[in-house]
Image 1 (cartoon, rainbow, N blue to C red):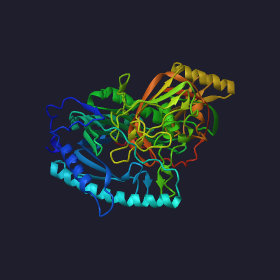
Image 2 (cartoon, helix red, strand yellow):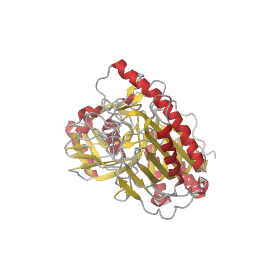
Image 3 (cartoon, helix red, strand yellow):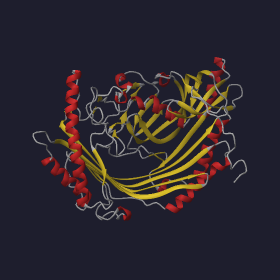
Image 4 (tube, rainbow, N blue to C red):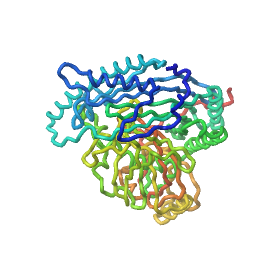
Amino acid sequence: MQALAALPPAPSGERNTTIASGGRVPLPADDSVFRAMQDEMDRSLRRLRMDDLPGPYHLTYAVRQGTQAHISASFGALEASQASPFLDMKVRVRVGDHSFDNTNFVPSGFGFHPGGQGNASFAGDYDNLRFTLWSLSDVAYKNALEVLAKKKAFRARHQIAEVFDDFSREPESMRVEPLSWSPIDLPLWERRVRELSAVFRAYPDIQESRVQLAFGSGTKRLLDSEGTAVRVAQTHVEIEFLAQTQARDGLRVGDSLSLYYPGWDDVPPQETLLAEARRFAQGVADVVHGSTVEAYVGPVLFEDQAAAEFFDVQLVDNISSPRGLWAEDAGNRVFDAPPFVSRLGMRVSVPWLGFADEPLLERWEGTPLFGHYEVDEEGVPAQRLELTRKGKLVGLYMSRAPIREFKRSNGHGRAAFNGEPSGRMGTLIVTPEKSVPRAELKERMRAMCRELELDYGVIVRSMGGLTPIRAYKLYAADGREEPVAGVEFVGAGFRPLRDIVAASKEMYVFNFYHGQQGRTPVPASIVAPSILVQEMELRKTERKPERLPYLKHPYFAGKR
């Protein structure tokens, strides 16, 4: 196989995607990576065994290879630029059986990942691949035996009566896409990233800024001992804007904007990106001159990105990774089951908003969806998932780790390549049964404020968690807006989902990496309307301000 620095073209005869489920289909005969994976897996299943201890009952091998690049610039100057090939490998070993094995348990000092991970030579030849897979399998098998012994002792010590299966039984599946990857024109993108970073020279209120481009293109393969085989082409382009400044009282404020594209053809012209950079920079600069809010109880309008972030925190986080893990260390509470697992069948939202996850959608009205995927990290085909029905919770994101209510995967076993799959989102679609033009949401909030005898309502346009980053007062009397700095929500709980009173006709696509404490981030999308929440409480942040710089930024002080 050729070195990845000079990736070969897709082999002839493999121009079409092969899809199968429930029946074995031969792997591509000329794919030496698959052949190395299959040969070493067969050997491990037959012979990987220590003394009288059990061998693996399930193996998963994953290999990803391709090229990656990173470019960074600040204030018009290039900071970093590099492109390199990669070949990463991962082995997951299960010892025991489907009902009880070495997973879903966090032993003290072991961390969460039960498998082995490593890198092979960029040449990726058959013998080198088998050597690396053999080495990783050996380490993962020994760890699996030790973890299984600890887990059995933990169960006996804590006298746990109700035990769910550790691994669901799913039909084998195959998805083999043509080999495909994209190169990067490094000089072109160095110039474009520099130009984008130079936009911030027009904003003296911003203290630090940076523009970054991350690119990756290649192939991911997955093979398991049940017959599932996956080969998918993966390309992503991410352009990220970062800025940091201080409000007038010294409170430090930072924000970021990430734009994701599935390929170079989807990246818009430079003028469009420059306009995005200016819009982002102006939003951060506005915060510097913002007023503060000592205390506020009243309606809150979440627009565009902030509305998507609201649903991420209020709903998605509370239904992700529903299988809680046993943990030896009491401090590992991050692996507990999320709150909404116990609320299945109960009302969690207003009945006129529908929530469904649709990972098979590639675009929304022409906009690429970062959360699109065909097969999850466990080789299970992606599926549409209904999450609520008339406001009641009816679904959870499921991997192959069963819980009391759901025994099977729904194709949402997701993780970064170096992570452990759990039930995670793909593309959340929020559908209102009734809606109004977005401009009317502002008028409705002004009317609510007048009725409540409030001088203003609050608009939120971006958040970090449930902390507003870009927020504005909307005055009831004349409709003018005024930036707000340094506020945070108080005691939000789960109530705001049930207090939504209106939604916009316009839908916003928010592409991002969904993070979850203790888990690796996954590509995700939320398509949602702007929303008006009847009542929330805000207060001045308790974060401590810092001293402002004594001197102005040298560029804006006239010293070049």
